[in-house]
Length: 574
Ligand SMILES: Cc1cc2nc3c(=O)[nH]c(=O)nc-3n(C[C@H](O)[C@H](O)[C@H](O)COP(=O)(O)OP(=O)(O)OC[C@H]3O[C@@H](n4cnc5c(N)ncnc54)[C@H](O)[C@@H]3O)c2cc1C
Image (cartoon, rainbow, N blue to C red; front, side, top):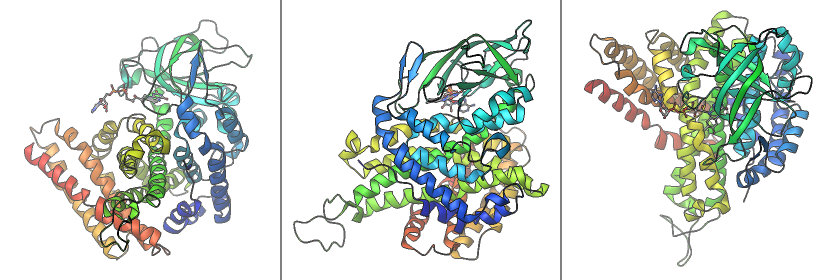
């Protein structure tokens, strides 16, 4: 079984030739010194080496042995701790953290690319550091100076791992239902609170990768209003500074469909002493920083996992021979390679087109994250915030769906050999399924896009995004086709959708029926924009890119018309 191999040349083509990232980064004074293309190339090469040599070989073992729970402790699969220790000591988790916090101050897009490779190589292992950067941002922007002095550098460097404790048995998508309580500890010199309650499905709630774990927990203060506004955020470590253990207990870990290398923990808080992070009642706000970063990372997981499945299927299709392909020159009694059969080529080229377009969109989103933080011009920062707000739910939802459905299509390339364990492709399909569920289910992403980000401002932000996409297209046939589709979507949203959803007597259910088709149509437009951008880049005439480009326009893009027809049908029947 072959391991995932990062391909820095492919990713670099998108970053440097298609997106021309150094140009964008040069406009950000805080990052300009670290945006040297040679340095960025070198970081990507080194990241690829670490992923291929240290993390990818542990993937199968992580799945087969899995994380093991015994009497409240979790032992990670063989090799996981050593790999993690090597990872943080080499400075990888601190890539994009600020230098004053112990980080390297490199652009966020390099971190995004690192995590895409890591997820492709070993999704289970990567769950552990996957939340670190979000936790770092959350502590940096919301914690008191005292808390920062104790925890920020440890989390920024990854010396200690962090968790995000939101979900409760009865509170999943609806966090406003959370019941975990926080009561002020009388006479505590540090002004802490006693935390009591149970959180479930907590990734990395307990493990032996690092010597300490920093939990960020949503809980409710006494007399707080019901619903999300009553939630506050708390920080509680596994071990306090004096070495004593906090009253946080891992009760068990879940048996799961996949992702066996990541312990999914039930965590009990028994009046555990915790510090508040940020203001009372503003917990979701503080957590928001973490969730947004996490959603981009889950989109990157989707891209990475699909690439891992594609690599396996592509390699198999170049070895396995069955039947004669149409127009075959094979002699009687001989068979052609699987890759020569159009049905198989179609699967591979369509998935490749999702991966490459996903990279353009995800890397651009990561670049916009740095623009939000560092650009001197407020209008440019606003445009970047708009991009991230609208594009992140599309990326999270559409590319995690694709990691599973496209991964399953890649499994099909193996025939029966895909369904058995030997080739490792079935692990990718099992592991990928969860990304459609966590960090806000894909249904919640669609509702977030349409009901929270498009309808409330009368479609103004969306129209600005569509105009921005159109403004970046050239006059090629693909560019023109994409521009026409952008206009069609803008008109549909501005005239039909807003008109119908706002008309007196319109069913309140209507936008909820439409949300998923709306998100998918926007995903198609973003992909068409991405492929038009790739097509316009010098070097895109190489077969490597033209094959995937053809795959996109032929096998993927027609979904745009389908989604528009579904949106129309819903409006007509409303
Ligand atoms: C492996 C794994 C790791 C996880 N890691 C973490 C973690 O580290 N920290 C953490 O806090 N949580 C974690 N989670 C929890 C995860 O975020 C939740 O499972 C997820 O948010 C969904 O909540 P739920 O499972 O309670 O489903 P529910 O909220 O009960 O939803 C059930 C179904 O109803 C749909 N639904 C709910 N509300 C609506 C609506 N308004 N409109 C349309 N459809 C709706 C959902 O989309 C879903 O399909 C993890 C889960 C898993 C499986």
